[in-house]
Each structure stands twice: as C-alpha cells, then as structure tokens.
Image: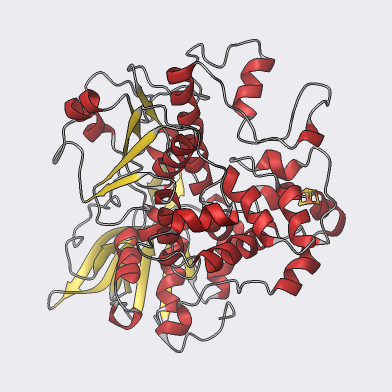
Length: 501
Ligand code: SF4
C-alpha cells in the first residue's frame, strides 16, 4: 500500500511498507554498488555484514550465496533487512549517497537474498529436516565439534538468538529460556506489521533451532527455574532479557478501557485478525519516539480517521528518526508539539477527551507547563508510547551481586559482554540501555565469542573479507569488531575487564 493512501481496509493497511524486489530489480539495484575497498557500509553495520560481497553475489544472480554471507554475519539478517534504520546505518554510510544523493538500497537487497533462501527452505513452523535443508544449501557453516559446554540464555529476543546461533556454531550447546509462548522478542511481538510480519521473526527462530539450539518457551527464569539451578546445570549464563512492558503515564483516567500502551497495541495486531483489533476514530498517541510513530501509523493503517501524536517538546526535538516522522505524516498522522497530557477524561466510562497544557523550556532549562494554557481536546482512544520498563529490579532479585551502570543497565565488557559475575554475560537492551535490533544481535554474538574465549582461550573475530586485510592499521572491515579494534588501538587488552557502554 502506498504511503499516504486512504486506508480503506485493515488488511490493505497491514501490507508491508516496501514490496520485495523482483530478481531483475535486485540485479539492477546491485549493479549500482561500487564494491568499495574498506567499504564504509560494512563498518556502519553493527554485525559487520560484508555488504559489497553479498551485493556482488546478487549482481551475479546468486542470491543463495548472498544470503550465506548475510546470515553468517547476522542470523537475523531477514528481520534486520526490514526493521534496521538503514538510512542511518549502512545506507547512510554508502558512498553512492554522497555521489548521487540516493544510496544503494542495501536493506532491500538484503531482504531479497534472505527471502529467496527462506522460500527455498520453506521455513515456517516446526519443520523436520530444516537442518538438512540448510546444510544442503550450505547457508551456514558447519558447526564446530561439540565442546560439551552448555550455556543458558535468558530471553529469546534478538540478543538471545544472536548469542545462541553463534554459540551453536562454535560447538557449544545453547538453551534459550523464553517466558512467552513464542521466541523472537520484539521481532515476533513488537514491530509494526507494515514493517515486518511476525512470520519472518518466527522463521528466524526456526533457523536458529536448526543449528541445534534448544528452546524452552513459556519458562520464566526466577519463577519456573531458579538462577541457582541454571548456575548448577550450565557452564555460563547469557542475560538477554531486553526491556519489560510499556511505561505508563500515571495520569488520572489511565485505567480506562480505551487506554493502552503502544507495545500492547502492536502485540494485539500481531496476535489477532486485523479486523478484530480495536482502534478509535480519534486516536491520541502520547510520546515522540519511533514506537509512537509505529503506533500512530499503525492506527491510521487500521482505519482510524484521525490519529495525533502528542509530544511535550518541539518538532526539532522529536526523538523519532526523520524518515519515520515523514512516513507518519504521509500516512495522514497529525502532530501536536509542546503539549502535555494532564488527564484522560471520560463520558459514561469511556475515553472522551484529553485535558492538555502547553509546555515550554524555562530559564533553568527544565520543561514546564505554561500556567493557564490548559484546554480540552476530544479523543476516543489513548495510546501511551513513552518507553519501556527497565529490568533492573528483576535482575537485582535474580543476581543480587550484579553491577549496573548509572542508567540501570547491566554493566558489561564492551567486547566480551562479560559482567562482574563469573560465568555471567549480558547484551541487548538490558545491557546497552535500548538500541536497535541489529545492535542486540551484535551484542549477543560478541558475548558468545566472549563465552567461547572463556571456555577455550581462543579469540574469534571476523568474518573479514581477505581483500580488506593487509591495509595499514589492520582489517577495518567489520563493524562487529569495531570495539575490539578501538581497544587494541588504544593499547588495552580486549579481555582486560575494561568496561565501556
Ligand atoms: Fe556498495 Fe555503497 Fe557499500 Fe560502497 S558503500 S560497497 S557503493 S553499498
């Protein structure tokens, strides 16, 4: 569905934003790549995908080989192709952007290659023989011989999956504990459907399973199994719990039935037929981040005639990416800046309006409401999109000696993911304070290598294309290894326990 079109049916509104390339379109787009030496797009990718290498394979009509390059660096390459903010990562760094003002469409090419392979594999549901199919296509390298080591992974989201896949390939048995019935984290439950269908996230879980990773879904650590038990049964633990549920505003009227968090709203869209998801006629979305944009765009695409983002600062302060903001505007979303919601009003027990006030930044630099500026605006649904709960308190209960930084994120080594506790590693939102899916995958992968180094004493790096070796100063190629290079260039050992954010 083109952005900005009238949203006539919920099904049309749930169509993915960008149609896939045909094979011919993909080859034509791939031929725009300059195949740069020490390509900046590789450095800009947190998982260090060798972008020119996979694009060259598409240009030569070999999407399977392209997918092999992508998935060997990033097991969630299919979902990252859809949800990564490529405009500020690989495509933002693309040389062609500076030359022509229009970068090579790396994300769409990545999607083309991974979709092609997933269609070949018919990855959906519990498919016996998937491992053999992957092996036949040689999608992922052959796992190393079993080390006999077992690692418990708390959380089946992108960080946990990235860690589990890398551990499995390094020969270690990974067991993922996921409290929800399905693994995949936000990729399965929390991404706007017009960006990515849940089936893509679930297919990736199947791919990780095919590596021999065990999933125990519906099992919550701390409730169904204790940390002490994990410590006894496993040789290491990786914490990849992400964030908790959506934060609440806590204003009067917040308990009315038409008030919902953005995460719950998006999860409903993932778990119910579109026609059964309740959406108002006049929707207020409170917040200004990318999740607020997802919610308002999703509300419009579900047929809300009016949907307005209410943000307490100005347009220039909007934390959402500019391209997300533009998308929402094209989809007919409205924006109300410098306004704060004070109360949700009701008539006959249902949301009828918001009491709002103007905001401003005072001389001391603090945000305040303008006295006497209050007014009432009619709405029949309120979506709160003001962030997610941190897991700090839960983690303190499970790991009383675990150290946190000033943000409440688990403190861990920048390269190895190692925490202050022996045999405990961490990554993803609970450790990086909240970032993109691709950063979580990279964290998980780095921690897997940190765990491997603890088990074996071996350091794993790369993959780095051989043509990029031998450059003065070493191999610049991989965004994944950036932190290691940084520490080495600053004469610090990557394993010396130095902690960076
Ligand atoms: Fe190709 Fe752009 Fe990467 Fe250069 S920066 S290798 S042109 S995708």
